[in-house]
Length: 64
Image 1 (cartoon, helix red, strand yellow):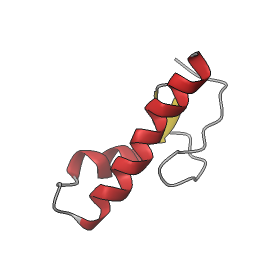
Image 2 (cartoon, helix red, strand yellow):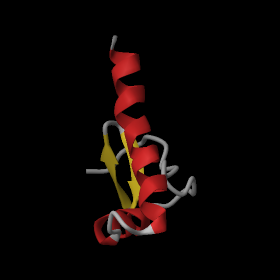
Image 3 (cartoon, rainbow, N blue to C red):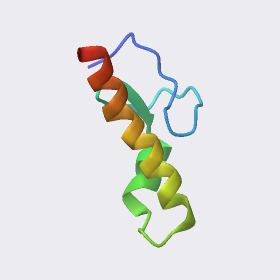
Image 4 (cartoon, rainbow, N blue to C red):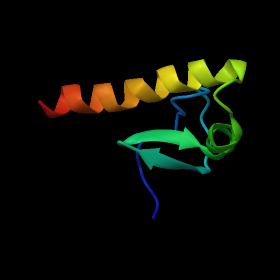
């Protein structure tokens, strides 16, 4: 299914054609792979979690 929405990744902030939509926000394939492979003890983990928390929050705010 092709989306006509913005394909700017919420994690890396780059525009890429391959990725997924989560809560109407785009995550590129490269960042999706990083998310799947990142362990809680990794330095990058906190940054990813912070950005992902923003997805749910921004969706809830626009829904109210």
